Image (cartoon, rainbow, N blue to C red; front, side, top):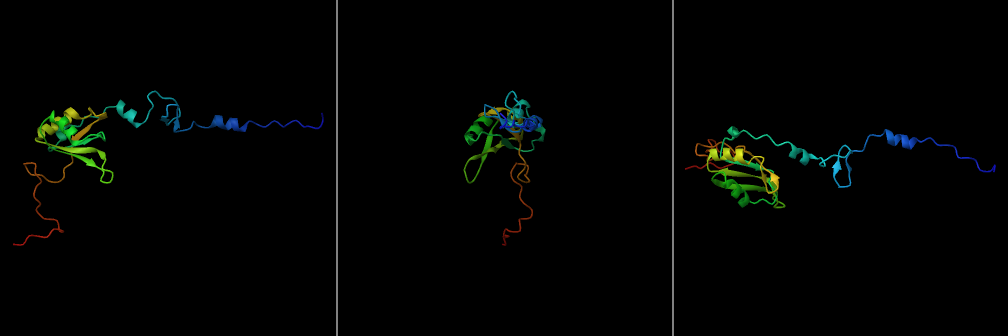
Length: 170
């Protein structure tokens, strides 16, 4: 019996280190969802879930200065005629533009609409902002100006032409 020596007892360092560690971040649960705090959370978490819980504040329609509207958070499948049908319920629509990626020709998820009158644009912001459309919640605001406009809503003539344009001499 004297040939084998008993193994010296090793301290349980690894188990103590694991217990002292903070929980892992960005761990996936069985459903494939990522949880930032490592714990189980009802609803899965993430920015989209939080965004659904708190509705966006409705923009003040008095801030709408012109006939042009910004329409954001569009479905990538939305087409101009879909937006036109939606906006016709509010008022007369002059023009619809959805912004596309020039390389992939896929929608960027936002666009612009021009209504016939300013009061219709204001009403569209009040009615359509934060409403569901094709599976997404719309963002509808007054668009930032492309530049100065005259009283008719048309682009105002420039007093000084840009320096790169040749001047007409007659």
